[in-house]
Each structure stands twice: as structure tokens, then as C-alpha cells.
Length: 366
Image (cartoon, rainbow, N blue to C red; front, side, top):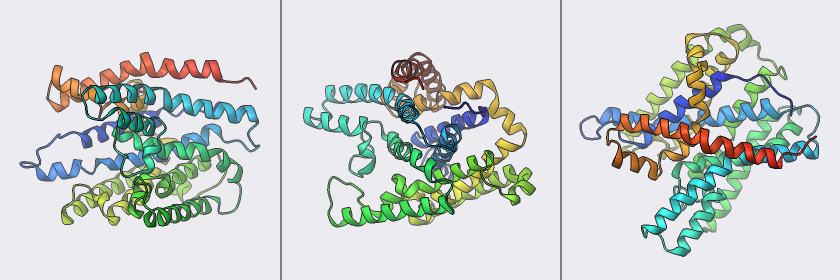
């Protein structure tokens, strides 16, 4: 694969988003004494679109070329994606389910079934099993579907209105699959239109398409004269829209008396469309313009923390956080700092070496 220019700020921003999701999963504020702040932080699940937009950009920017993949390149592409996602996913799930079985949370049969659904990422298609094992890993299912489709995307990208057709195609497929399973329920698969819209690639395709479009602009495969003229203001515009999105999610949650705005269609639409637009504007700025924000995200410490984001993301809702609370501190901020340190050590000693080992042993020479 051709090497492309590394964009450190895109790695740094991943750390901030992962930390936002951490505070969404823990109780930083009291629901009784600080209900407003509690509800606002409960909307921090909407940092997830950052990862999907960035993935769309990174995969297209890194792997796209005008000619089709050779068999070796296609093989190496999938080895690279497998090495990135599955080694620690399997390792951490193994530990999680062994502990669950030891503590009699599941029978042997249930443990094996749930373990299989988690390490294959099939759980991400089922509302019944979605949050079993490592709860947040349902997003890996969304990512993996995109990884599988990306080589086809590269082939079709030059066609007229490609991105629009790409998005509409998968919306249509998602609707059809949901229609069939809603009428023939089985194991919670595609159990509702809202589930498909929020939890599966078929509803989140716009986020990846947004990242692809950004990559196409950056690679000069298309032009946007409006952004070329007014691009200097995209960071401010993106941050303002991001604030509006979070404020809207907060209002939707409070007015509908739900914990998370994505329990409503209005919240899903804001999450799946307005958030990606705000993210697009911010990332556009990071590509083309300088700022204090960009320098902060590109700082070596932020890049290192961003590189360890995947380990942090998988570990922070497992027994590791429970052990931190038990043996180190029950203070959320102390637990947060501890989780950052543990995740970084895990990344350097386990995640990164495993990925390199797989690539070294399975990559084929062109």
C-alpha cells in the first residue's frame, strides 16, 4: 500500500472522544443533586460519530488508489484490519467471560454462546446481545461492516453521485432487513427500525460517507468551492454546531423524560446527521488550517494517548475499572487517570506487539 501523509491531530482527537465516552459510562455527577449536568453528560455517547467519520476518512485516504486492488493488496488490507481489531478484542473477551463463568453469571452453554457472539462481533446485529461482554464493542461491528465494504467503495467511487447512491443503498437495505426481521423475530436481530438506525452500519452509513467525502477533498478527487473560500471559519462553525447538537440532545432527553436522546427519533437524527456535519467541519479545519486546537491535538502526548484509544475503549467498561475502584480509588477522576495509564501500558505491551506480530507473519510481499 502507498504511504500517505500522517495526520497527528486526527489521532489526538480520538483520545478526547474516548474520554468523553468514559464519562458517559461513569457517574461523574449526581443524578439527585446535579440533574442538569448528569443529563448532559449522559448524551456523551454522541462522541461515537467522531470515530465513524474519522474511520471513513482514514480508510479511504490510506487505501484508495485509482486502479483495483491486486489479490495480494486485498489480502494485506484484510490482514491489517484483522490485526487492528481482533487480537485484543478476543483476548479481553476471553478474560471477561472466564471471570463471568467463574462468578456464575452464566451457565457453560450461555458463556460459550455469548463469547462466540462477542468475538465474531455478531452481537452488534442483535438488541438481545448488543451490550453483553464488552458493551461498547458493538461499535466494532459497525466498523467491520465498513471495512468489508471499503474495497468495493474504492471501485465505485468515480461514478456520478457515488456517495449519495452509497448512502441510499444501505438505508434501503437496512429498511428491508429490518422489515423482514420485525415480522419474523429471531434472537433480537434487527429488532426495530430505531435499532437498525442507531446501532448498525445500515443506519450509520452517512457518518462514514462524510469521512470519505472529506478524504476525497483532501486527495483532490473532488472540489468544494464554498469550503475553499470560507474554510478558515470551519473550526468555529463546527464547534458551535457541536454545542448546538449536545444542547439539543439535552433538551430532547429532558423533555421526553428519557436518559438518552437517542431513545427518540429526533435524537437519532441529530446524532446521525448533525453531529457528522459538525465533525466534518472541525476535521476540515485540522487538515487545512492552523490553530491552537490543532497544535494541542498534534502534541506528542495527545498522539500517544490517541494511539492507545482502542485499548482504552475496550477496557474501560470491563473488570479493569471495577478493580480500579476496588484497589486504587472510588474517585471517578482518579479512576479515569488510572484507566488512561493502564490502557497505555496495555497498548504498548500487548495491543501493539500483537498487531505487529500478525502483520509480520501474515503479510504477503507484493
